[in-house]
Length: 139
Image (cartoon, rainbow, N blue to C red):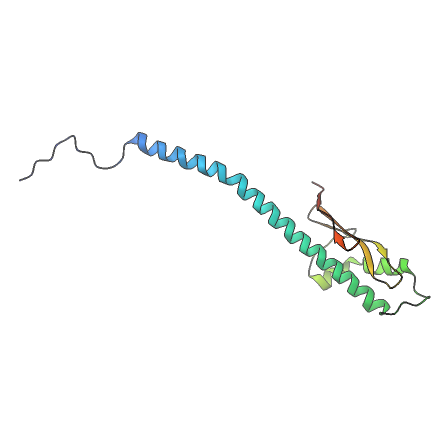
């Protein structure tokens, strides 16, 4: 028969378990800010893509309503007003923009949108000179 001494240990002591838990807590605390940054950037990218979709939808509305050939009888102001029609943009994009979320800044003489401002989820995106600006947080 084999004798088992009382001093032999099986398992971990309470101190060892607490040390492991503290190390895991430190690692988790370092990870949370990094994940928060990734989530914020992902949301902004999603909003950026939605803003680009709004531009395309607004341009489609102008082309659909006014045709591709400008005429003297159609005013650029009327084109701006029609292209900013949030109900139609919501229908075309599947978004739920509120009134005032889309502002057409400029339309050229060929009824092409050259300036648009889109507000999505507290961020403002402006299209000008064929480029989008960085999102400006309104929160």
